[in-house]
Image 1 (cartoon, rainbow, N blue to C red):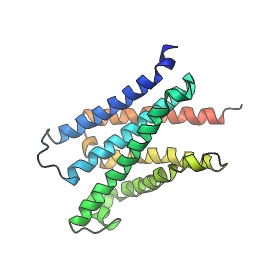
Image 2: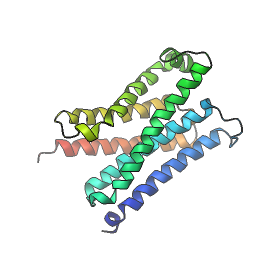
Image 3: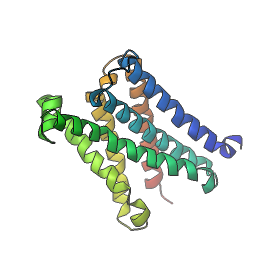
Image 4: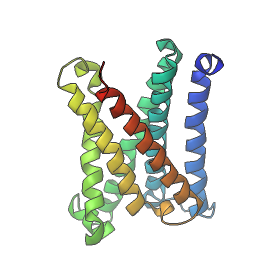
Length: 205
């Protein structure tokens, strides 16, 4: 099957596409004026890219499940995308925390509350929990064969749902316009992918 043989090309193309869409949405939000970039303006881009690339990894994962290509076909894709996503999920809150501290707002959680307001604190709490889950998930190379790791996988799935909700509530580029529609579409496709994942897991062997 041609799709099976070229799955690496399609995987990289999908990830590149969603990354480009994220950059365009972010750039439009700045009216393409990059002369006064600050941490406050830059950190949202890292968040958009982090979720977009994680989303593409989920979709490629479902394609891999059904097409069953040789493992080496996607080895570099997962290797480099995983590192990229890790850098992005560190940079996204890291830039904001650093800038808020520099501006005299202190450190989280107080600085977060001052930045987003009391009504949106729940979104920050959700994203903070998800952040720690994503970092813990990096230990999969060591613990993935342990019986309890399946619960970590469930936590990871809940974490990406949490990040989706967090982004819809707080994302500067997601409150209106074409990219909000794209983002909601991502969410719907993610929901289908997660449903398919757990349907496969719960299906009798």
